[in-house]
Image 1 (cartoon, rainbow, N blue to C red):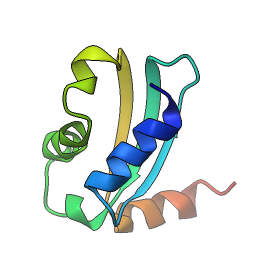
Image 2: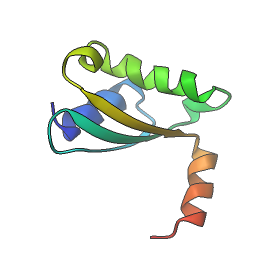
Image 3: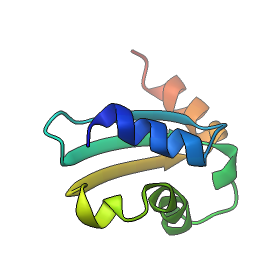
Image 4: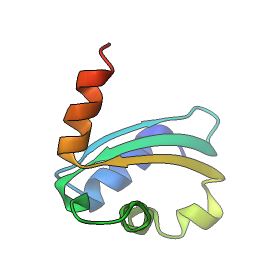
Length: 84
């Protein structure tokens, strides 16, 4: 498993999402997923949507996934308060 494959799996399941994944050891990853599909969902439900995209890989290939999920509005607010 690598970050690119993980990113593609999430993007395939949530095609309108902004997906950024990092991690270079093949087992520990960090992901940011931004999508309107998260609107009205609790953080737990948002994470469950992402985990659905990964299926059995969460048990077998991915040891750890630090996941940050946001709606597009939350993402815009975050970007405004965290300039590059």
